Length: 265
Image (cartoon, rainbow, N blue to C red; front, side, top):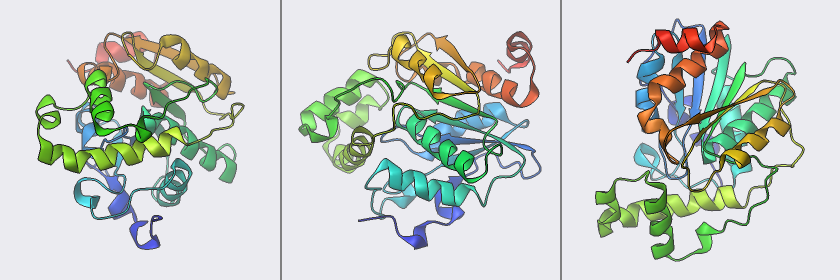
């Protein structure tokens, strides 16, 4: 079932955990597969008061659990674009983690196509290989035990949830639907955006190597920078302040050393 028009309003899609209505800088955050807007509460706090975070809530989870999942990443990108173009003004950047990185890239492409020169000031693409890197992932077609094993490998889900059959019964359909949207999506290998890209990746990520993440360089005419952090696929959990400092640089133009020095600890 496709996303309905009734579900396209910003109140359904956008969460502001640290509202800053007077801010001139906004960061739209796109969650990982199986993730929710609430995963960006720490980053929202770390970026305040300099920038307001608009965290995207995908259908089919948490307070939107009664809504149908997106059938494809293209459908999801179209819906998010429709919502955001009425919400964004001033300077804004996108941050996407894993599945969210691909989605952020696709939404940025839509903004730039709609109004060249008026898209995001920067893309922050986290824990995801570039679309030009070949892959044959088909986790969404595997049995439940394999999906759970993959979740354990990525270490992004509370282990108590993975051991609770009732909670797993609620979570697995979300994970499977998100993986299907991601794994069946095809981004043209020569697709590019004009804004600069900052790639962020953990040095021990079991599914995204530094080399595969660095291949995003081919997808921006505005330049690409690669930042490597200690940790795995969810390195962000332990490096929120450093990532916030990287994002602030997109709005201020300060050097990395200055931004890191001013980052809260």
